[in-house]
Length: 223
View (cartoon, rainbow, N blue to C red):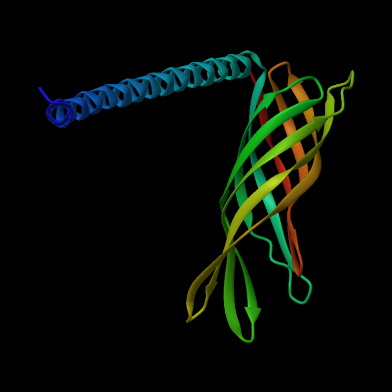
């Protein structure tokens, strides 16, 4: 066989085998990608599982800590005072329900929900306006002053979001929601080891042009 024929045959063999080589390479790349994707999915599943385990453990620990902590609830009648810089004072009332958990002997966390009870009427430009507290909600830190007596003074610092409603004679109702930093002080008078009478003065909203504060009296139970 001549050299030219041998070279031609070699080239033909290479050209014949190229599709097979490409097919094998494609299969190898497919399996490599599939293996890589499987490893990525496995890693993500393991990572998600680890994160979920950590979150579950943290939630259980937090729940256990709150369950072991001393808690309290309170129900108060609040006399609300809404005042504007250029306007009459309005004095509606509200029912305030609180629930709190002790952090230590100096601090409590507390959440509150307020619901309007009675409204107050004012006259604006010969129109009767009925103003009431629709509702409010807030979260607060209670800073306690330890004493050896039945009186337990404390300070309040937190955040409140509230909604006021005005019913204007002949024009319908309008409402407005506001939120602000809240602060105040109070005192508990112990009746026994599991209950107390409560008095508190709180400034719930102190915005430019108006202020909403309250004097509250009520009952507090410990468990």
